Image 1 (tube, rainbow, N blue to C red):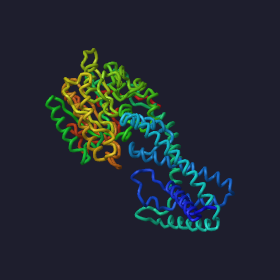
Image 2 (image 1 turned 120 degrees about the horizontal axis):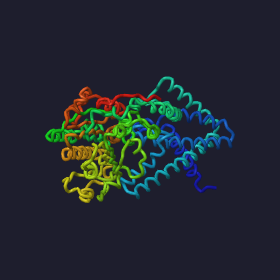
Image 3 (image 1 turned 45 degrees about the vertical axis):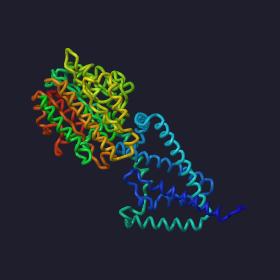
Image 4 (image 1 turned 180 degrees about the horizontal axis):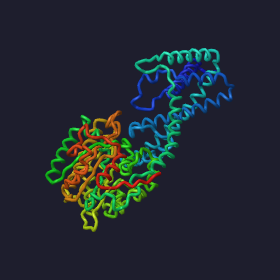
Length: 548
């Protein structure tokens, strides 16, 4: 006999209440951080009513088995909701059950690069423990509640009937509290959405294969490609996370706009002029390769499956068109690449420099393996500054504006760059990622500084090393994460084309882009996938379609 039966009963009631709160909370949990609010957790979940009715109708063994299975399923759905929250915050979309598991490895690598291996391992261990706890607690909670209902069958039946009638009434009359419907079918809707997303993903795979086989320039002869750029050194540069928010957000924009204005004037003094517009990126917050490939392939590549399909195809990329013409040497500068990169073949690059092939001996700047200024100077010394028989087409990926935006490099005298050791003191004096990641205001401020740095490093390189035959196209790959750009930011990124030869800019006069490096708010907006064909057409390429 218990010494304190009242305390035992109180503990039992308390545990049952905690179980009910866990189950109801999981049933009504939103899948976005912005959707979380107190009223979202005081709703009536219709799934709980149905579950109670089934538990009351079943014998003990089937009831136990079904309750355990329901708890595990609810835990799995809770994990998917949490993944949705993270993906909405960092990539502006929901988690894809078919395609996105591999990105979790990328997330772990990002944490290691940003916060160190110990922090990454601790975070990974914490996530694993959390998932196991969710499965254990929700499974045990549903079993306990099912047994509790069975022990109090009469009262439980009347209670389930009363709650069920209340749910139907609230649904029928659309009753709400503070704008939130009282009746909830959140879990059933989430299951339906996940199932539809899986079906759509599988269907999209087959349909996109057909789309990728069609190509307006797929059969264009080499001598009919890019005829109006012959003799020009053409450089395509992607600036990490350079999005519309950098130019229009009231906190970020003042410094970036000032830098764009100053750089436009400096370029003009050096004889260069620019036109700028907007592209809508195929990605948001991350997955930069989707933005790169959408811009250069002329296809809308908004998920990993489409990316793999295109990389394995012979669909003509813009950069490969230069190689196919036979009139250019082609090179890639990829300081963010730290492993084998088979995509080199698709993009038509004769040579690629990865993070370990640029001679850098300085410190990493969080995720970024080297400052943009160093990468550009290394490109100059290894490729652009060399005498050659053909002009050069280059694709350069600049990474200094990659999150977490700490520490941000500073510009140094170009003649002092050397092997990059000069950046050691700058890195040591910079902000630490852990101090910036958790602070939204600082993240926005440091993001703005990183964009100013990247754009200025690029334009200074052009002033210093550009010639009458240099043509620079630079753009962002995507907007920064929601914590910086906001939960409802567009997917637009700036794009600029810079050249000394006025004929180069005359070729795109019909595009109605804005003069200078800062596109006007009402400048034209195209999808990234529209750029390849417009660029090829503007510079003399003749369409010869390849049909699917």
